[in-house]
Image (cartoon, rainbow over all chains, first blue to last red; front, side, top):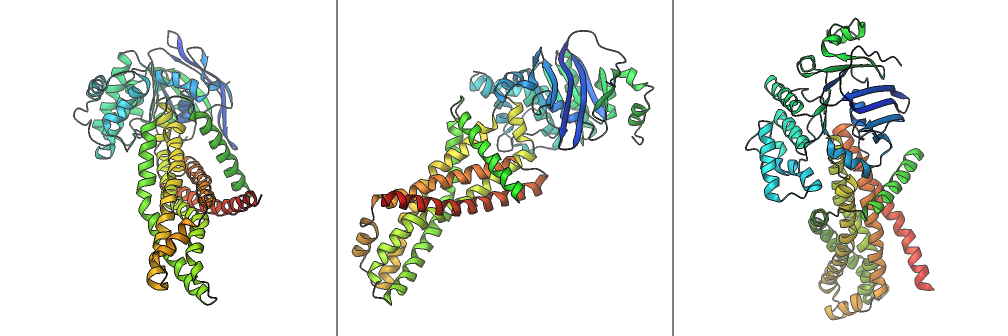
Length: 254
Length: 251
């Protein structure tokens, strides 16, 4: 195992990844990844394109199944769960998609109300109140009756975040949430990520955006060749002596 | 080619099995089923009726002038009625459904795949089979026989218009020979075929939609494959069912 742990947070791991491997045809994506995600932290998965960050993130909510290994959420192996069992996990673990993945046939309100209508017994009035409150959290008042196509890319991302957090999840997984956004929307998304962490949400973030990484992150896992090459606190990784990490941070040839 | 065929057969069989299992599991989305009945059924009525009208008229003309040479003009109502009820009504209506509803299903689901909406349905703790696949297949299973029954009547009636105006056949005679003289089994055979055709359209379109990769080009490819595969399978299945039903009726 080439993972090099430079420093570890305190507290208990809420998610434990143990030796997962994944192949698509002949392409090996994960070669035996071990990773612990601790309660209340923001962990960023960093690495070059195609190194398996997004696949790892998708595996944490059961959207991808590893070929081997375990992914334990509160001690239960989600890699072995079927879709029905995963439903319970997905009420506690939210996934924010890169481009929002909003349902374009539904209004913003119906997008946000979707998990509430599916998993709670709230009345339509209560759902409406919760939708308005959650939209307020992401700075989007008054857009509830619009369709996703009426919104800008940045607003769609924030609606995507709002939909993911409306069930008050324990863990939030973000797949490149700031890619392609203007500075204002990037700042808004980073503010939301920090605020949610302050309210107790555990966060796993996949991003290439160095500013995002060093602004909000507690720990960073640097991935390379299907493995976690180095993991540690933000400042430790920033000053890492690992040549690959330094080249990545400074945008040099990998 | 062979690999794609086996991929399709295995994948669609899997989809059928998984959908059948999910069908009896709560929750049930009756509202989505009704929505699909409207979207796939009601909106397909015009195209299927136009096809039925054209078929009925052309059949009357062709058989009218063709049989006249052998003194068999009076058989036109029976031939038209029988052909439409047993064969042309179900097949042409379902081919039109494959073109309109099947392409719509494959394109819509394909777009949902490439924009990660299907992943979002899963990530939000719901099942794409129950939310997307089952309502569409069930809607097709209901609407295909209904639309075919209506298209049969429209086709036979339009045949009557031509028979009366061009062939001088009396409407009462046409109505009696074209409809009343037909057996219930003629109607049932045609309608039963449409249930199989609807299943082919629904499963094939959902399968190719869910298998979409590669962005907008992939959506186009899935849509084309869904329509072409559905049409080919409908014609093959039509022969198998026709043979099967004649065997049963002869016993």
